Length: 239
Image (tube, rainbow, N blue to C red):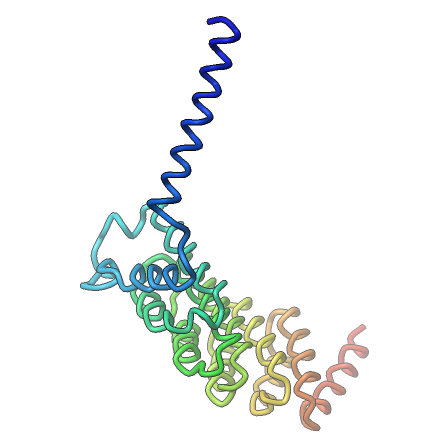
């Protein structure tokens, strides 16, 4: 093939590809935010999340491409923030029926991201508390503990749940993130001071104890500061 023929062929190929791209835009125009949200809601309302999906072996559950798709769909909802508030019921239902801990973790983060900018977070808070208390995988519980730090308006529900984690969860990282969330809530976490003092004095992980000291300082009640002063004295004596 001579250079002229090759050049003509390449130009024709470029024009053909451009034509295909144009036709694709005509037949598949870019989605609006509303259309994208509607599609994601439909996705999380899909039959795979119903009819005993959790309890049956299903190829959709462990397929790598499907895992990635579900995680990315949850992430997309989280990135929409308050605009995705109408998707919360579908996302919570899917979370309750999702067999993959990795996808559940993405869903929990998405709920937290939506909750940051949504005033009415009751249903989000309840779902995160359920994951924190009941999910068998520590990574999901960690994500729930971290996400709950944004639910300050629901502190009266969140703080007792985080206290329960400090008292009962055997995973040090989960306790660590629960302490962080209590610290982020500041004075809203004043009811957690006795539990934080117990962590400060007794938790087997140094990082958890150190974070408990930071949380007590953030809460700032007289009881918290008194315990923190004693903690500093004990640390000085132990050196």
